[in-house]
Image (cartoon, rainbow, N blue to C red; front, top):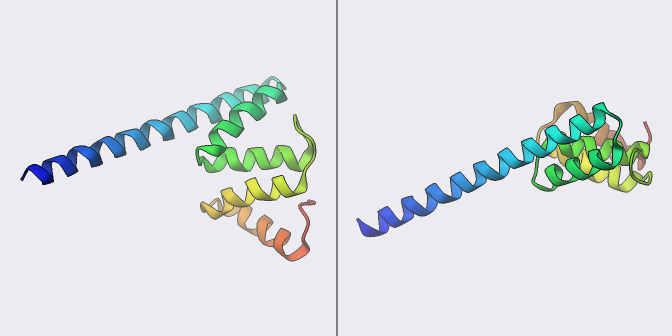
Length: 110
């Protein structure tokens, strides 16, 4: 009974921690969207990168878009493909075709 309780306490802590990280990723993505709205690309990149590194699919796509078109960062086709395809790998259906096209063409051009 003691081991079961210990296991439950540990699992509860892990799930709560994961939820907090996810909420932080969503919050960072929201801050990136607000920066986009006012045209502050430096802030936008900062927040989308934070959120993308925490695994938030929408932020991964947004960061990839910024690399693809050189908004707030140097234009970089490889990094564009990396981030946008990571979003697609998470089931972001609108970008799966885009990534398949990149794999076929070998380019992140639109």
